[in-house]
Length: 402
Ligand code: SF4
Image (cartoon, rainbow, N blue to C red; front, side, top):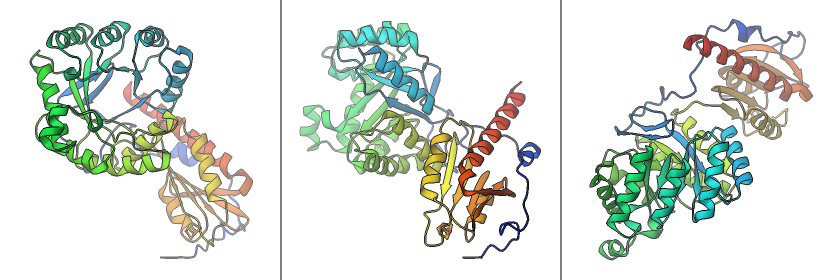
């Protein structure tokens, strides 16, 4: 419903000084970055698995993973990318380990980084053992693909010795031939059967520090496979749609597939696979989790689509604000609204908001008008206010913890 905003402050007849007092006087409790309250989603009960200092499953927050697209033997490029991923909020990082020179790189990378690392291994059990020795926190390996019971025993022993978890990563594109024959193709049932077979090999060796993924590029096949597996085991799930595509198509597919599962309480850690910079995977993952109120980390930007009433460049401003506030970890909602018609309502509901007006824009802080700004100053004022609010939340959280 359109309600013209008729306020003399907004029309510029009266000015209000900018201050951060409203933020300083706020009595709201600082929000936690990692809670999932408010989602209304009842999560599936699972066992807990550790990947370094990150707990997956149980009551722990749904963690966000990505995978480096550098060569693991190229230590500098990989460490640089890990630092970018850490900056973006990535909590677990996977590295491909296809050969011994990658293991050598892994050792150096481990020394220079802190985020839990997962070694992605296929077929060669020796690489799994070497990766464990190099200091990774989890092995992604399918025990059925390493050719022999003795080799599985050796890998499991190494995982136990070094306190590592194992991710069984079933992929519809590489299912066992006998399962393809039996099920008539890479069906969700065949994927689940494959996963159960690998789980059985680990359980036979009393290994339960296991998480499972069941990925396909087909969204509904993936969803169905996880749903079926959720009825069979209580291990935590790593969610993902494999080879999902470019930033746009991959984000949509992952949002639909992972969104469906997460909304049903299925999923404990996730990777959004994109043919893009890995930091985009992290950004999209957190947006999915924030949409479902499963995580609240970082700035949540609300922006109007703009229309013929728009007074400010919403598109440009939103991109700039998102970029400049990407480092903020505290959960803060920012509204960028184009005009005085619907703008003030949304801007008031946000922690910090702006509504475009004639010649100038009106800033809101915690639901209250907080001054008028020239168009050219909007971005800087929003960034300044959000950073101040984040600092305040941070200090309050520290006080609560001490
Ligand atoms: S400019 Fe934005 S806020 Fe104003 S009416 Fe159009 S879409 Fe709504």
